[in-house]
Image 1 (cartoon, rainbow, N blue to C red):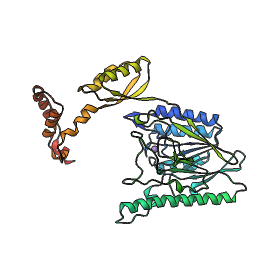
Image 2 (cartoon, rainbow, N blue to C red):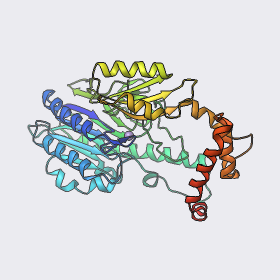
Image 3 (cartoon, protein in one colour):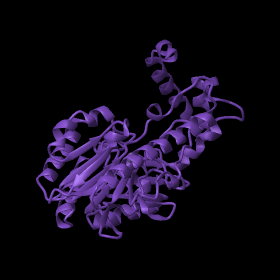
Image 4 (tube, rainbow, N blue to C red):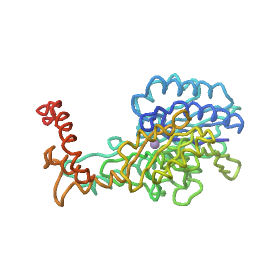
Length: 408
Ligand SMILES: [Mn+2]
């Protein structure tokens, strides 16, 4: 059996207000070609198919069109589980219909029986067992008692996840024992395995509020031949074990991830072993960060323009000079080019903010006039400009219905 493992597509995701449908469409087209070219039998998607619980029509169109194309391809089965971003009931709604296309959906955790699938090869022979475990929600697995301490909650949560895998894997072994010859067992999961890595700006949302619940690799019994995991957006092994992997997201999720290679994982089972090969996903849109003072930023933007680079940019200004119209100046520079600036961070201005507050003060204790006065000081605005600025500021304040505004 030839398997492809992917996860964390996050269809419908935006980056600083820009939708990324084009990239998702390009990725799904590419994936379809790879499934055919590699002769893949089973595609596994380990959660976070969509970026949110109510996907737009366009996001749904991309998803269903892809599933329809896979059903027509040489790839015989698709198994999709829900992640923490997905709505379990939304994914589940078309499951009976999709089953006719050999597309298996597990949105909600429930009875172990429903999560263990026996997939057949082209000849109708049993060829693979998949433990299709979705993201386990707190309420799916933990019995809440009043007055519990945080440690108790976390302990019970981890114990619940462990127990769930014990049950599901026991069911898989039971099915295995009834087969004329053994077949590989693959476990899916959408969880944070202990020791896993996140990077700033990779868009991984914490799984459990107030919890550091991380699952040890020992939750997978030795009978598991491969664990296809989702949730962490960088491709990685779990505890150094080649058999337990995160495929990572196919798109870089933010500027912090822009230089990371993206992949899907091919797993080919033969008689005795699994051959595991990551396949690089092409970059469908450049994401670049430019950091520096004005001269450096200008120089790099000119260089990118001269080679007609088509990219989304993050600009981090860290020069000493205060540039009031930074955004305007940047927009002028990239006019008529194929560059787009998604985010501008002015570190000089940002650094000035903490100095607005004295020690032990909190913002809500200051009135609007005090905040503005401190801004004028912090940015060293010359005295002769202050009167005019103050007048305009008061005009703005007066237009706000402060009564309603403060009552929020
Ligand atoms: Mn995710």
